[in-house]
Amino acid sequence: MTEDWGTMLQEGSAGSEIIPESMELVDQNGDGIADGVMFQEDTNGDGVADTVTMLSDSNGDGYIDTVGTGVDTNGDGVIDSEQLRTDTNGDGRMDTFFQQSDSDGDGVFEYASLRVDTDGDGAEDFRSSATTFDTNGDGVHDTVLYVEDADGDGTPETVRAMDEEEWASFQAGEPQEEPLPDNEGTSPEGYGEDTYGEDSYYYEGYEQYDPSQSDPSKVVGDPAGDEAYWAYQGENGPCAIYAQVMAYEAITGEDVDPKEMIEVAEENGWYNGGTSMKDIDKILDYLGAETEYGSGGDLEDLADCLEDGGRIVVAVDANEIWYSGDSEMFAPNEPNHAVTVVGIDYSGEEPMVIVNDSGIPDGHAVAVPADRFMDAWEDSGYTYVEAYA
Amino acid sequence: MKTIQEFIRQIGTGEAVRSLIPMGLGMSYPLLRTEGEHLLVTVFYYRSKVKPQDKTELFPPEYVLTFDFPSGRLMTFETLRVDPRCRNIAFDKPAGLFRHEAIRDLNRDQYRAKREEFYESLNGLIAYLGGEGSFSAEQEQTLSELCTLLYEPPLYPFYRTLARPFFERFVKA
Image (tube, rainbow over all chains, first blue to last red; front, side):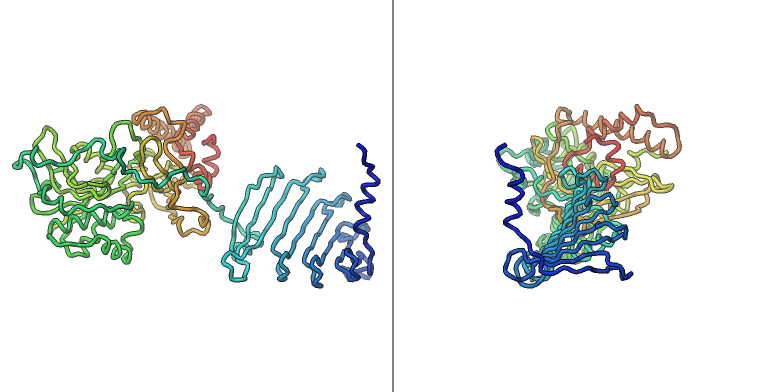
């Protein structure tokens, strides 16, 4: 090493020579005995004091244990940066360092930090900071970003944005509910991409009803005629609205705009990004259909309803209809979809339940093997709504 | 004693879920906790978008329900979309993909068999918590392995936050 430590120290102090402008003894606790000393300094040599330092003996043991410094960094006569060093355990070593600053001179400290050596080993093992922001640009600081590294490993365990009320509650030490983690940055690439391209997998395992391949005398309902009432819902969610509209149009021949019905459902609390099973008859009721809501239905019930001129909205686990084999195993066994049953074809060895399914492109008159349909329906407890004109 | 499989079926088709949960959302694996004399089962509901080749998207949970076991009585219901704790969650962005590495080599039947095994193992813990029988270190190890295998890693942060003691004890993340 060629540098001289003494020189370095001299260089360091020479450039920031401080001349106290004033110094006075202070009796902070009012017992008539001075327990602190305060002095003002002109650190930039412009002739005006810009730094106030207070050395104090807060516990009266005769030793300085607190050093507080306030600095007017922009020369406007107002302290805009404060530091407080404290020896909280009286071992002669400062173990707590607090600072706060007002960087834009508006009189509000936007940044505060606290660093603590909690175990007295000379190393800081707790760090926290709070920074306030004006997130909506109205000139008012409305959000506090709090960051805390409680074990001193350099990685914050807590990063939390709080509004004024939450911050006050947090500072008051009130019990805090743990915020749930955000998922920004974790979303996989390409999410939301259309999945209905040439490589579509939706058509695996089922086919559409073909009247030319079936015996009309063994078909219940009018699946070929009801194809005309099918509509594709596009987005996820409004399947039950579409299923009810398709059923209503089939039993009445009237034309109903499903998007209007989504608005009606939203206004009435029947739709909130989806429809609960309890509400899968509400639009039919709204439109004036005669309905019967139930659970525990079976294939015979469906056939009876169709023979009586009705249609049935059923709640199913679509995954069990749309997918087969091992190509897709994510099937949470939840009723997650509503379809309209428009026919049953008994022509083949196995009955086929024919549904208008708004959840898939070209989902009109989809023929689902009865056993697979029943598996899918089972997950809702065989919930159904029979609809009649 | 009611099994967890029966319990899940009960709550899945029960009034609370039928009334409160929009169709289209799937139920998470259950999380257990005790509160006084109560054994509570927490599940959350989340959206998924099925895609081929292990690209099924799993979205953040939207509803959290806690039920009393074995009665199935709904104890708490939370809508996370309007919860101030969740204001940083982008509910319309996936949290990750299914399926995860640990189950990549399982086929559908094997996956379902593991799930059944998990539930049976959980029944052992529930019986123990209910004062029936013991729950050995070996059983705990088995349950831990199954939790770690099946719980979806993209949803770990949510499982952890919603039932930290259970998650940290049984999921070796």
